[in-house]
Image 1 (cartoon, helix red, strand yellow):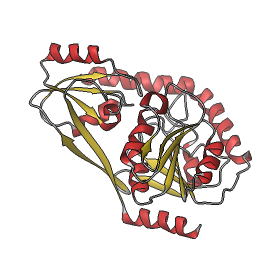
Image 2 (tube, rainbow, N blue to C red):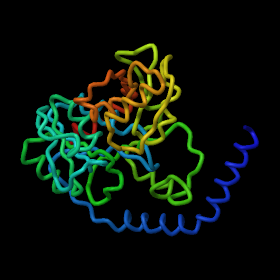
Image 3 (cartoon, rainbow, N blue to C red):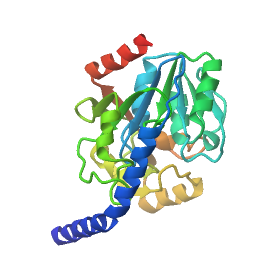
Length: 297
């Protein structure tokens, strides 16, 4: 196992070296885009929750935690994984207005978790902001908005506890050069500025873990006893009830263990679900800095 790990690491290093010229070019293009952007200002506070690294970093639970403190906020997301396009109101003050297929899993999870807020999905964030203003929003929260460089906003950048490779895509996981993090108004580092807290519902003696999230191995340290098998799908993928039922029978599981993000895509399934619930505890100093920005606007 040690030899295999060493070989895999050597291959990753080799690939990073070979792809580094492309990463340099990509990083330069993204930096120029940021430096040359003309920012538009809107007449209400706008907070962006984003990251520099491709993949999950806690953006959705961070958005939910922040919105729970700010009723009448409108969350604007691109709606990754949705089977629709254009601007769609997912919810208005807690009233669900569409389906998970049209909204995407993360947007629907936010809508169901925030009964006093509204959620909009749109590729055009500015158009969605104008819509939110017309509906009476008092605060805009942009989900995954750090790269929306043409909007004046308070940028919160989420950062994992450990970063191994700091190269931009394709040689590394970064969307831009790592040093562009200095353009953020607040950098929130995991296990320093925010911590993940996990709870469970409807656990069974034997469970099949099924999930469609990025980097599903990050769930391993949070799994309860009783997981007899694991089945991973691509991030944002939709589930087939018949396939899941067969997988449960094959491994003798009494329920599916899923995240809340997965569960919103299983409504109507006649399968027992055990839920892995994730929420974030945000450091009080970080929250005070966010509140200062909101009140200043």
